[in-house]
Length: 121
Image (cartoon, rainbow, N blue to C red; front, side):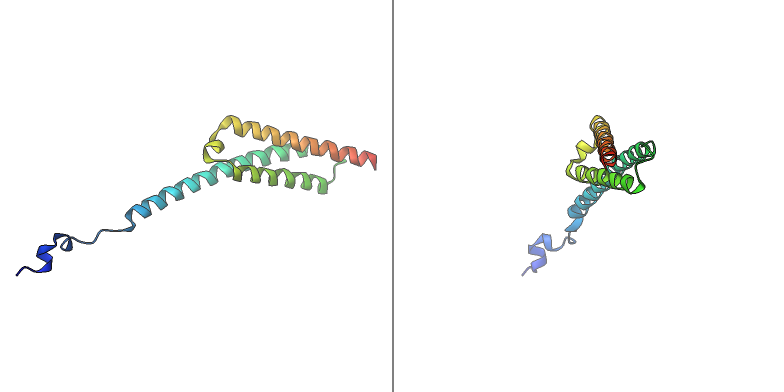
């Protein structure tokens, strides 16, 4: 009589790794996530640089508190937008530049609004 090992050849094979595919898939996802985070960090840094530059040239009558409020608001909006975009959209250089210009325009508008309110009071 034959043993069960002889009858079932797959019992003689070493066990396969079940997690091989899952691990490679997780590594791919991790790499995509790292790439996305680096793109987001670049965009946030670009916007922050432009906003800080704009605020450095803002009229002296704009208080430090107002400057901080404007910076915080624009940066919060930037983080919301970058979180909502796909990785492909984050990679689009034209869209990135257009968003940065839009963020600067928003900051200018906020500065002008604050200056108008200061004059009114």
